Amino acid sequence: MACARAVTTLLGQWREGDEGALVELAPLVYEELRALARRYMGSEGAGHTLQATGLVNEAFIRLAGMDVPWSDRAHFYAVAARSMRRILVDHAKARRREKRGGAARHASLETVVIPDAAAGPADLLDIDEALERLARIDARKGEVIVLHYFGGMTYDEMAEALDVSPATVHRDLRLAKAWILNELRPA
Image (cartoon, rainbow, N blue to C red; front, side, top):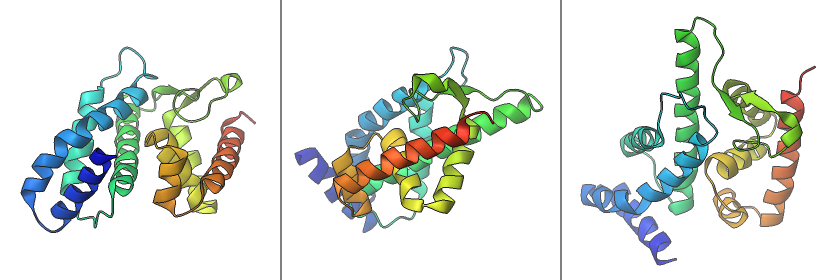
């Protein structure tokens, strides 16, 4: 818990313009961001050109360049999760363009978004499009998916970040997973 308080304190100092706080913050958050990135990249094929370290570095560069009024550690990791998701999607889109419409990389639903072995593999871009459709219908449910699967947050952390109860997070997550799974099933 001391580390969480330290991260929140350093985020506040950084928000106030203390560049030294960013230097102190980096090692505190880097390993947690790497663990998230390794989890994402674990579902990728052996020939994937983006590595976990590269994903973390790109995300951290983007986070450092953002002008965000960081409220706390949960807020930082929520934004980091969205940033990593965006980087992965942008990378998949670039690879698809390079292959002139070829297959985008496949991400396993079991490890990336929906834990349902019957679902089989799904394209990361299809998952992203389904998440965007869900967010247009119900923004909080879309955010719960991003925070849990891309941000690695616990129910309590998501509840704090979204200002709802853990029971609401659980309910939203179950409904969102079912909705996305339905969207990704072949017609």
